[in-house]
Length: 349
Image 1 (cartoon, rainbow, N blue to C red):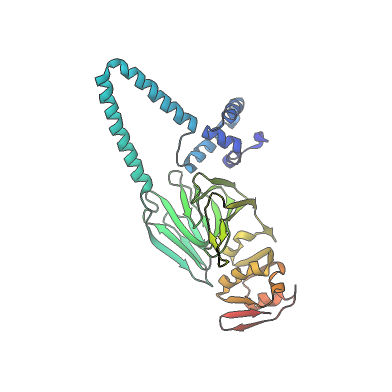
Image 2: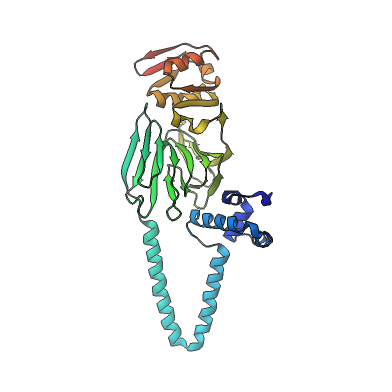
């Protein structure tokens, strides 16, 4: 199995390899060190995987390397004592000042707030194609907003998304591309992926077409998932129900988000999750209730059901540049229903 790994992301999808890189499991460290030594032909791809993981992890060193560094400093401290208390005091004071400076510098660096100075908005019924300053392409779906960091393509590449967008990111090893949403953020180098994260929907999706991405929960620090090409992740944030029967988000330790990692959905040789960028409306095994928000955003219309039985009808279909009336007429062929339009509303009964 391991011998068949040919891409960096193949290694990054292996949990034992991740534990080896983090130094969090000694058995994994021993196993992978022995395996790498026995397979010199894999050294280059392993190094690429290490470098990619280091960048995606914020350039943090493995735990065992950090501990080794601390132990080395402690050993050095013991040797310094031989030179006398005065020298030790001076050295310790210097070390404290230096350490304080480094902590302050890193604190300033890591806590600098992101200022989103530019925004692109795609209203209901429209879609946009955007070329960012770094050459990356973004397709912005209906009822979506993309905000750009004021330092974008300078020191960082940070954007914030509400809604749905397809990203074709230019590779830049020194400046990872970061997409922040309401519930999570995605970190990439150069890849193509689709993100669907509407604020009024109870689940979000990230779909990877090529490359590798890491998804991190905004609240549960240290909680992350790495995706490989051809996979998607469905993220369902935790909700609790209040006394008025409304669902509200919660990040209680007792109520955790749910994650489902699956493969891309294919229909008629098309990737369902990103078909919209080619003006194709594709849905596979979806109820009418699931399709409802898609139709509402696509045609800037409100749909009202007067029959629960119609809501639960399941459809698999593909439409290209079809108007709403034509789509509804074709859906009628699966299970009959009537509809009428009143201003900006479609009543289905």
